[in-house]
Length: 522
Image (cartoon, rainbow, N blue to C red; front, side):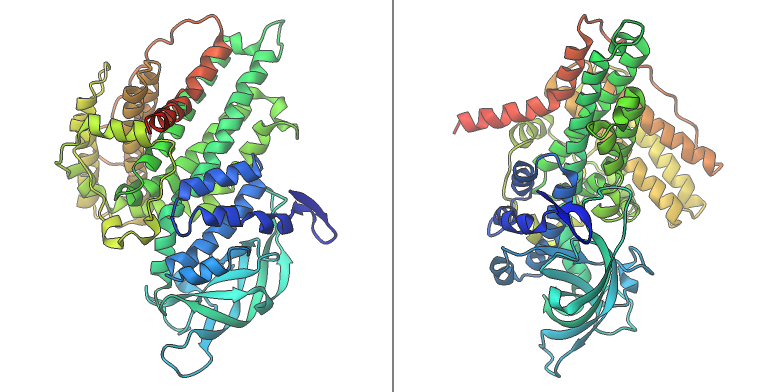
């Protein structure tokens, strides 16, 4: 689905994309099923990130129409391409400082017709889209939460496109452009930020899904290459240092897969707010790191155009940018610190495992885009340490010491009046994500009953400790440092390729197996 364009060269075939996009929309309206839509996208666009992200940008912009409560408009425009008109060069992600202005065309207080004037920047699909969902201000001097509104702007109101060349995903077309023409108000005036937040909640899966896809292509490709390449008349996969590196990458890749499937399984509840933000920030950054490490281990093969190893590594860096600004997402997590550390409810291990096994890979309509914001803002946390103890891991992981250490760190930052400082809020938000990754790794071991995943637990704990100690060191704090854990010995095996591939795919196979079992049970 690519075409050679006389103006832009080899780009996404937007005409064919327009013909197929309805299949994604149909999964979201009237029954809102985000994961099904992503699965449909995979079937349509395969392993091409340019296509997946171009389609995803249109889907997110179209979802904004739903989030505004304009289902009839969304239904009528299912054969159209959309784009998100949020960012402006001078403001970046600070949408409250937007300079695009919307002027009503009459004095009716319920007027929905406006003239939109401004300039947008770094917008995907914009030159080829039929409609733009534009962030603008009716009162250009306002700057509070109620200063923004959302408008549906036809392509005819846009002009003066300038393509912005990128280092990654070069077959997409990102531009800056002027808006000077009519547009229609979506939802209520001044409710733009609320509409965007409502749209953003379920969309947390999208970039995470693409990131997982990139990993699931590149890591096995790295294993295959190292199993065939010859150095000193031997396959590098048999070298102890190479094997250990790939083993660690496989475990980390399995954890990232499980965290994504886990978020999907619990997506219908208040889990979405806290853990969805984790997908949009922590998981995408870990995907970048993992793919970069994989490229370093594999070596020169990854630089070839034919290889997904290098391509996916480079392309993965675009995901945190398009996903919605990972720093802001992590800052949103930090506000949950007290409730996360102090939760007393005891979670039922078997109940959670049952949900994980039954819902990991199933697509389910959850209508999350219409979930009450009050519910989403108040995740139902449970006693972290007690839950890990109830999982009964056969390793010496002291979950209560983890919680106590985090509480001590938070208390010292509070005493020094640093908890409102953006640097430390970001760091503490990241620490909560690392805590949750540790808990997820514990659940992964219990759900799969694969003892090699105990080392995945230890790896997550050690990563948490490294980040924890770094905060203490950088800020010259008095909170005691934590000590790393030793990994369990890796068991010996005769066929490293088969072992690593089985270990990597186990989480995915686990999810698919449970999905199939449920289908067989009716």
